[in-house]
Image 1 (tube, rainbow, N blue to C red):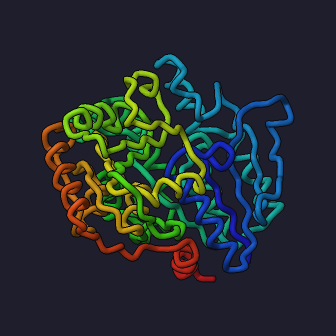
Image 2 (image 1 turned 180 degrees about the vertical axis):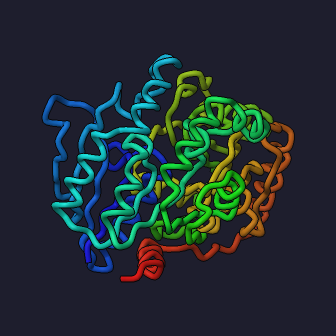
Length: 385
């Protein structure tokens, strides 16, 4: 059996949890002795980058190409706002991507097609996948089909969704995904969100938690390590976190910031704050093993953050904003705290409580989560293969 996985970003251009899930999806299927092919985007690098370039990557055949547009998906935030609208229209109706995907499908003849985030590849693709594959599954990761940026602030939901041009955007995404028959959502929140907005009415929809790679157990260490994993951007609540940090830090505490973003250079010098930028999974695992608390102070609706799932698996207590699927996950852990977003005082009190429990020797039981192999098996169950 052969599976084609379609995702907008893949190594070496992967940057977030959605891509991590796509990678683990591929690895899990490969461990089932499936043939796995990936179709993904890459930046423009001359005329040759327009054609799908197949490369072997750890037993997975990866086709990458540049979907013709104003710029590569990862660079759209560098465009002026008016030009982003033009980019979005081209992206939604990217006929070139349709041509490339059809070419790869005809060559590889997959039994199963699985799509992850498609923004940057084009929203014409689902209609092609429905026609070309006996089994096609789309996996949700965020709110991109109702809000192009994928970011909706917790206190501006109605105001965001009811903007006129976004209503037009939602009309077309709803239309282009209308024939998808199988949907996987990593959280009850996200599935309910889309159903409420009239998506996937005729689809067989299931909730399947995101997989995580099993990691080595925690190791003994001195002091208290607080970890943040995510983009160093306002929407992720980094400013709220830093304000709370200045109120709670003691000499034996260290704040680890894993990620990059526009606020990275604005973080004041503090010997007790370590900034790593983006890390490979193997490097991040080293930090996980000495982490005492994960803090997730996001200000936007979240689906099923991979960092939270990893913390659950490690038995690491979590302090998280009450935002969508994030709090849904955190509530699985008895030693964790859910707080009001953008509330510095609430974050301070929650961190103090969790740190006190940590210093008192209170241990949090790991939560059983899905491995890539188990995730792949569950996906196969959803097909007729």
